[in-house]
Every structure is written in C-alpha cells, then in structure tokens.
Length: 622
Image (cartoon, rainbow, N blue to C red; front, top):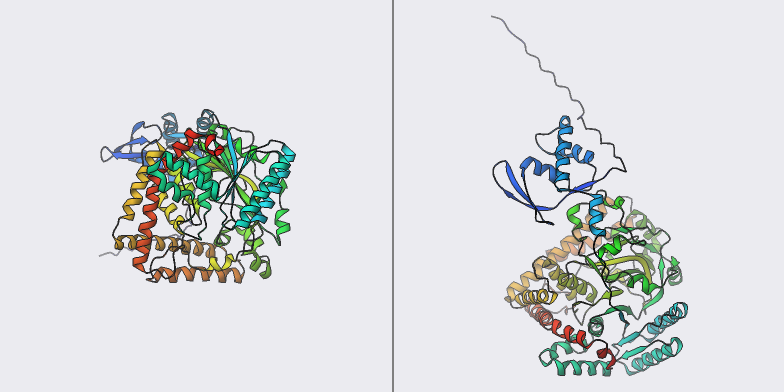
C-alpha cells in the first residue's frame, strides 16, 4: 500500500487591473442613444430608439455592451469598460468589441459628439416678438424703488434706447402709493421713456374690463391679480400674473423693486455654454454691502440686449452663437440620456441671471452644499462664518452660461408669445412654482442662465440662520411646484392650454381626496423632503472632513432638527399655515389650496387669450 501526498499552494497575487486606455483628446467621442427594450427570445431583443422610433434587433450581450456606453467616451474607452463589465467578455476580445461598437456607430445607436452638436446647430432660427415693457414689481418700499429707478436712469443715459416701463404697485399705504407715482413721473421727465403706473385703482379697472368681457372667468381674474384672498400675505405673484396678462403675445422683462443695475460679471467667468446638469454656482462672500456691490466687472454692452438677444431663440441660435458656443469638450463624460432637454425643437422661454448683494433665498441651507474653495471662504474665521451664514453680502451667479429646464429664481426676460402660465398670487416661492408650471406647459422650452449678476439690496437684513437651522418645512408654493414636477411626463398634448387642463384635473383630484388621504399625502411629502435634506447633509458632512468644528456642529444640528421632525407625528403643516392647525385643519387647507390651483388652470388660458387679442390696447387702457 502506498501513500500519495498531494500539495496545493495558493499565491495571493494582487488583482490584475487592466491599464486605462490612452485617451486621444482629438478622437471622436460617442454615447448610446436612449431607448426601450422588448424581449424576442432568450437571446435576442428589440431596441427602439426614443428619439427616432427606429427599431433594432440585437442579442442581449450587445444590449449590455450598449448600456455601458451611455457616457460620451472614445470607442477605445468604451471597449475597455465593456470588456470588464459584460459577463463572458475579457480584454483579449478587445478587437472584436471594437468591431461591434463600429457597427453600432453605423446603425446610429452610438452618436458622436460631432453628430450631436450638428443636430442642435441645424435647428432653425425663430422669430422674436417685440418687448412689450419692462415691468417692475413694487410693494411699499419707496426707497428701494427709488434706487432701482436711479440705476435705470443711468442705463437710459448710457444706452439711449427709451424702453417702456410699467410699475405694478401692490402697496397698501396711501403715502407709498403717492411716493411711487412721484418717483415714476420724475423718471419719465428725466429719461423721456414711456411709463405706465398701475396701482390699486388701475388694477381694479383692468379686472373690471376683463370681467365684463369674460364674466365666467371674473372671479378667478380677481383672485389672480387683486389683493384680498389672504390679507397681509406676500403678493408678488399678483404682480407677476398681471405682467403676464399685459404682455401676452410679446416679450417682457421683470424687475423687483429691490434690484438695481448694472449687471456685472465674475472675472473668473468660464467661456462657452455648460450642459446644465448640476446646480453649481460661483459664490463669494463679502464683509459688507459696499464690497458686495463692487464685486465683479461692469458689462460693457446693453444688459437688456444680452437677454433679449436670446429670449425666444431656438436652441441652434444659442449653441452656435459666438457668446455661448457649446463645445465638444463639455460633452466628455456626459450621459446622453441626461441631455434629453437639448433637442432640436427646444427654445429659450426665459433668461436668468445671478445677484450680488443679498441672497435671494429665505433659508441659507445651500451654504452647506458649497464646494471646498467656497466653503473655505465661508469659514475663513469664526467671525466671518457667523456673518456669512446670513447670506446678506454675497455674489451668486452661474460660473458659465447654461441651459436649464426649470429656473431656480425669477427670470429676467420671458417669451410670452405663446401661453405662459399663472403663478400663485400669494405666498413666497411663486417664482419656483411659475417655472415648474412653465415647463409643464412647454416641455421643449429651456431657461438660459447667464453668468452675470444684478444688484439685490433688501430693505433690511434677514436672519436666515434661524430658518436654516430649523427642520425644512416647504411653503405651499414649494409643495405645488413639486407636485407639478411629478406630473411632467404625464401629458402627451402639444397645446399648453390642454396640458394645463389635465394638470388642473389632477390638482382637483387631490383636493377632493378624503381628509385622511390628504393628510397621508402631506406627511409622505414632508418625510421625503426632510429625508432628502438629511441624506444630502450627511454626504456633505462625510466629504468635508477638514471643515471647521463650528461648520460641523451646525450641519449636525440641521440634521438632528430634520430627524426629529421626521420621527414626530405632528400635523403635517406647510410653511404658510398657522402653527395651531391640527390634522383636520391641514387637510382642509390643502383641499382649499389645490382647488384654487385647479380653478386657475382651467380659467387662465381663456384670460391669457383675451389679453393676447387685446395686445397693447389692454396696457393702454389704464
């Protein structure tokens, strides 16, 4: 009998990581088209391209390879990734993978950077309507309006264009109304510009005229533009709705009375056009108002023309322009499915710019999402941090021009040649709601965020840090804007009025839900918002290990505040509602708000059509 010994030796070698392919910066880059898939057998499927509707039969392995090519990369890079990601393939099959990729290019399933850019640049130019007026929303702040008008006097003296101006005065105190009239008369005498003043009497006269022509829509017209629905509430949306009606069929520019020219640019401005895939901003903090107002460089050109040259333009005019050309270099690494908003039929519905001076937000929670350089500037010292978290003296603007689907703030110029939507006449956040409604009505439309900033000087400093540290409690307009965004893909209609009608039906559906159903909807929404805040701040906290302890302590306190609110079983109250509301009161308030929004959706297209037919006569009637 013999004994055989068997030996087995295991060597723990480091894993063999294939070398990264050499990237030729001049080589074309490709990304896979988005599509839908249906199975044909255990090994084959049919892939239908969303953009063109073309159908292609392929094996599931080829489909897996195509799925690895979503981002714009060279074919060499795609082949290397496929070899390590798709089961059954390896680096030794590199040449075979390249042949498959080449066939996908020939079939149009992989799109080159050049083809993508040519597709956009070939979009036809669009005609632009004239500027109806520059509308100024004013409310009980004569000193603010005076500063804005002084800056417009300087603008008119420099550029001598004689633009028309309309002051929409939502003041209630007689002394403020009188002062605003006097300021506008003086502005007209100084500049020679055509001006129109619309105060309470003129506003009532307009609504009376509309009500006589459209008696069925009279009540909604009164609610949308007249004070009184919620006495004492912020009514910026009333003036917005009035400006939209008075400019129907044309274009408009929108000022707030606490803004001031000139537009300025950041010296570190990046040239070209960005893709608008993130919300990065150039943010700089200043020690005082004078420093903030002196930041950046004055623009040499007409600030109105910078916006009006692009407002209403087709996408081909923007991406091919000398000012904001879209270059192939920004496409590298971009996922083609995330660029669906860049389509040949897209147009610029509005333009936007940043601010220098006071921040535009009620909360300053955004400061805890800044990148490392801006965070270092925020926290340069404990004293600077305590001042900067109030966001009273800041520069905030896009570092590069970009195309967005929804504007984060009030646009400057708007193309109102086709139906623009209403916004809630009361409550803050009316700009975010308008932008969500505008994209629902016009899914092909974009907002061009220009890398410039306008002065924003509030009448008094705001204590933003107190709001920032509290649990996030969205206002009514934020809730409705989020509701609208969840419905973006549900309408197939091309007519914006029909789209609004469908949206109104969905709003009325929520309004008529049972009280328990409305409460559950509110609670689910608030939990989602607060969980999102916690998740985002947790990621920031983990990534900013070198942040000062005072920054970390505040981030933890915000996380804890939202965590406590998330676990509590309090009545699901929105930010505009009284603290004393119980669940029954919240259900009733939500039903009332959503039914009002539904009524606006159904009546607004009729009001807008009437205003468009009237044209400049409607504005001239006051």
